[in-house]
Length: 576
Image 1 (cartoon, rainbow, N blue to C red):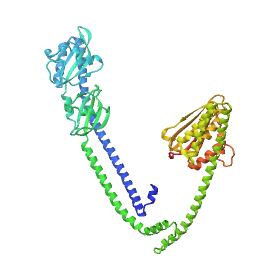
Image 2 (cartoon, one colour; image 1 turned 135 degrees about the vertical axis):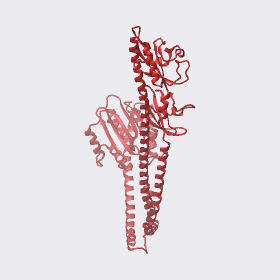
Image 3 (cartoon, rainbow, N blue to C red; image 1 turned 90 degrees about the vertical axis):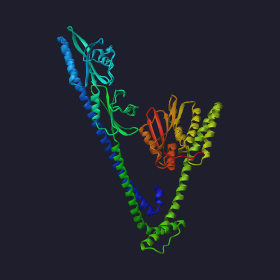
Image 4 (cartoon, rainbow, N blue to C red; image 1 turned 30 degrees about the vertical axis):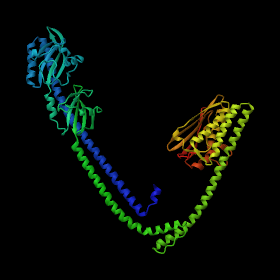
């Protein structure tokens, strides 16, 4: 990208740079303002919805708390009046409670066998089997609290078409002086719940629902779920708190809260369509301002860049012509004094630079080629000598199969060596070299070690230094596993980390001390040191071929392992 930018004209560079700065600045500002506005918008929606939901919850809980207070008073009266044997007085209290509270449609005290003891209902309207009704079973399940049933047609009455919510609890009473338990129940009209729902303004498409703990619909005061309930489906993943949901006809903010005294959930759906329209209008306004500012800036920048670049374009054309003539001097007949002086200085500088560049380039090229070939050639004779020595040994021992295996591996190794004159090979090829070498040495050392090779196909095409693993494996054998009394192990692992290719050679053995590792580093980076030829050759070659970012890293744990890691910048090699 930088090279492409250098190839464009000064006029275009000024224009593009200025426009880029303005556009990026305006875009960032627009994004920040829009993001902050959207965040504020969402926060306001959440806050308003939460306040509305809490207000509705408070209204419902206040009403239900009043009902529980009344039921608690009736519970106490049932205990004391039956203790006094004043059943008529208790019935009058029941009837008075129904009379003064139009939302209480009836009160009944039922013994544990399911028979009514006292009731404000018409006795002929009471169905048998009260002990199987939900209010009765709920009360017996937990006798320490008041229970609220779902809104329903009362199953304990024969003739009733009005939905009620039944409140029930186990109470104590006296029967002929004996203390017993019964179930006190109150039927409540659902009208108060409807009234509370109608008093809340949630927008055109806003509504509320009551569900149980499993999100099953309990109460739908606004009849939103008469023909399917998209609202109910939308809260499947909203447990407590709020979220924005999109329904067929509107976008709503749903907030879920739990009602005290029950296991019900109160779900409010607030219509946020108008607020979203306002947000969209503001975003469109921001976009129009952004486009207008960009257009105005573009016109001003184009005019300014033209005034700056026109005088320089003439000199540029002469310099381009000069470059196309292979450093033929440029003679400007027109132009101001500064331009003519610049032209003369450029002629002198260009000629000298060309001469120096050509000379340095040829010198460096010859030097690098000579150094690299010399370093690589130090490896091949050394490896060949060791291999032939192993084959000779096996021949003397009449181990024909092992000789055949070693010769085959050696053939494969040198076939790859002579087939590529470059100092780089693909990782897959270098690993094949290494495995051939390990096959040879494993036979030679009579299975004194095992080896593993761990790599990934995704790394196979990255370039590595040719013949870089063989010297490391040779050191791992001679200075590592061969020194042990028990069979050792050598592993080769490759990985990609932090933009580099890592090739690790690890062997078991006695390990290296910190002083020894420091000595290896010193020898490896010293040109005239005659020791540790293998490591020093690898280090110099990898630096020459891959640059200063490439490295050789040595780590060791005493009496356990030694690891030499080759670190390469990522570079894709050519397939054969």
